[in-house]
Length: 118
Image (tube, rainbow, N blue to C red; front, side, top):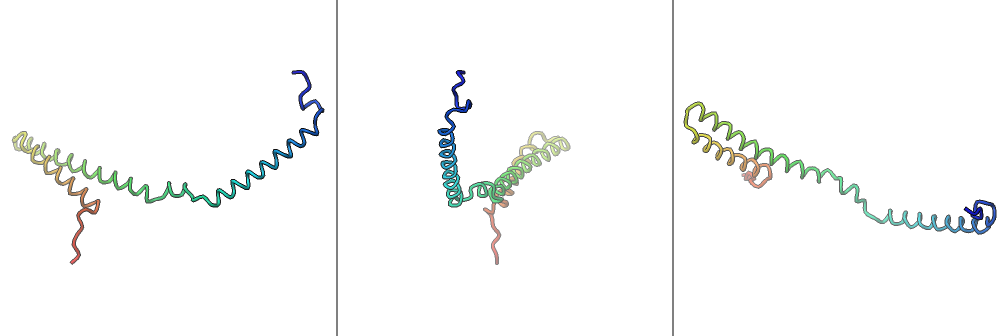
């Protein structure tokens, strides 16, 4: 802190040219950025498109349908065993049926199994 810096009033001519240089460079940079923005594709709109979220929604739907089929089959098998006393055969059979139903629902929802038009 010698007091000889640009704020003491000396050297204002060189400071004015430095400021004008800086302003000119800033304006050139703004022009270049505007040109780049105009020519660049709109990536934000592509990343947040509804079709990207639709795929995630379908994935959650299919996984929920599969898990629901297995849980429903297991629950029905457990109830069947408790009611008839056939443990563990009812649980095993209905768990397999629930698994098959879950796989069928996922295949149907994904469009793998399409109905023939005829």
